[in-house]
Each structure stands twice: as structure tokens, then as C-alpha cells.
Image 1 (cartoon, rainbow, N blue to C red):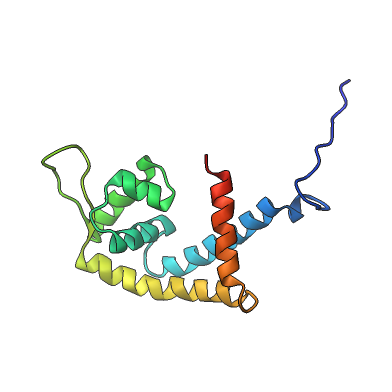
Image 2: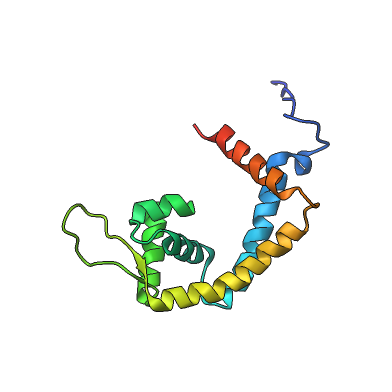
Length: 153
């Protein structure tokens, strides 16, 4: 019988529930649940909302560019875009002169729906930020950036 070796955790922690990764995932799950709840009232999912937000800031992005910006696969973004198109929130040309990328843009209804949903999502973010001690937001954002950079090849 082979003995199992204990690997030292990267920082002091009594158990896995105290690990940085677990706590980050817990915060992410809480944010996702809160966003799911408020977006349901606007007939949107989190990926749909993210797509509308990115398109409002950067109109004309392709499926692949939107997928990268919203952290989903190209296949998933294709489903998201088709759903948004079917609801009249996004438009894409049926053909393009060169290449295969079809740039997406918000429709007037897409902008209206985004504006309404932003109020609810920003209220969630406000609740989240208010939970931080005064003066900690900038440091937290910088820490998130450092974490992402450390894990990116």
C-alpha cells in the first residue's frame, strides 16, 4: 500500500474553505447569483448582459472578439448572439465583404434593455463595493489584476 504525501498549502489555512481560490470562487458565485436574480427581471442571462455591455462600449466586434471579452467559448457566444438577435437586441449582417466575421451592434431595443438592466446590475455592484472598508477598492482591483497576470501564460 502506497502512502499519500501531504502537500503544503500555499498559505496558512485550516482547511480548503480558507484557501484563496475557494474564497475567490465563493465571491464569484455570490456575484453570479445576485446578477442572475436581477437580470431575470429583464429577460437576460449574465452572458447576454455581458455581451450587451461589451457591444455598447465596442460596437462592431466579431463573435470571437465578444467571446474573449466575456469569458465564454466562441460556440457559446454564437448561441448568445443568436438569442439576442432573435429578441431584436443585436444586429449582425447576414454576409460580409471579406472574411467570415460578422460584426455585431446593439439595436435601439438592445440599448434600452441594457440601460434598464444596468441599473439593477450596478446596484448589485454597489452592494458589493460598499462591503469593502473605506479606501480598499483600488487595492482590491490592483490585487485582482496581479492575480490574473500571475495565472496568465
